[in-house]
Length: 133
Image (cartoon, rainbow, N blue to C red; front, side, top):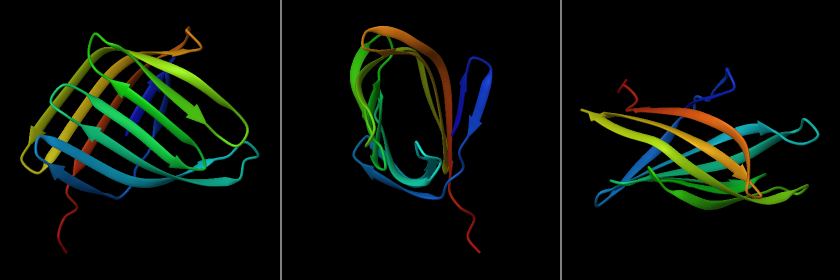
């Protein structure tokens, strides 16, 4: 997963599992993020991809939920042991492309915290099956 905000690029690579239920695809993976005191914090992430949107759910050291649908401003939240706040995402663009055993998802959105614009983001997610050994 690659995130770009204000020219700053952040890349996360993780092994995970993909589950398909009808027209919904769920990607689950675990990552380690720096906590508020620079300690390693484990976070389990689920990405739910549907025909018209995407939902990003995180549990563990932090809990958050963000939903993305083109042309929609949708509510979400962020919670950690040290802070919590409501947020919303206004999705400008969402593209989902399947090619064989891989999937590419790209979306752009404005992030609002307490109703105020906090940042503009461009995210790309590439899912591919691990080669069989």
